[in-house]
Length: 87
Ligand SMILES: [Zn+2]
Image (cartoon, rainbow, N blue to C red):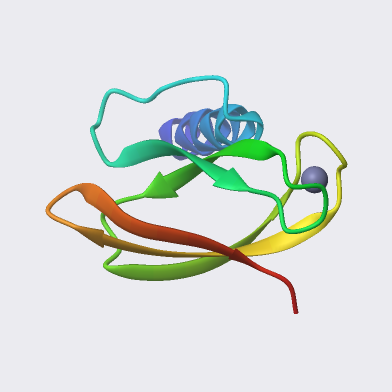
């Protein structure tokens, strides 16, 4: 069906914006937090989906571009802790 194809394009466009962290979504589950890069020590802005109580994901530092892991905990739509780790 044509409608299904259009929906898929819209979803990938949203994911594209999310990746670069430039667009705040209005649905209220995305929280922007500053987290310290374990490599260069600079603060990087990362997007955390507060609909998950616990999550872990990889991101790249905005400053030195090196990948690190973010472990986050959320409660009631707010980020209660966010920690950068290196494997
Ligand atoms: Zn860095």
